[in-house]
Length: 99
Image (cartoon, rainbow, N blue to C red; front, top):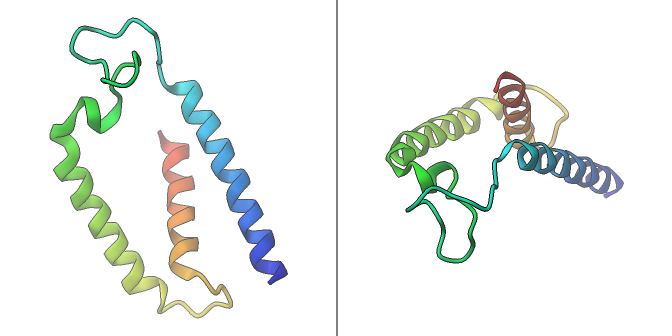
């Protein structure tokens, strides 16, 4: 149980760092171009809200990646109890360094 608690704490800290990093990168100016404001806030739409035409591609890639992780991670001989989750976390880290 202590291992799970420690792992949860590590994941929480990683999430906080990722949120802070992405919050810095996002441009949340109060003057959004016309038609790009959300109904709830005056922040401009970001990501798939602003460019919904990319949603099918994003969904397709997510499905493919998760299918591949689930199919292959379980085959790896390791003491790691959460192989698929660990693999996904490492993929996310690697992708973040390349963006």
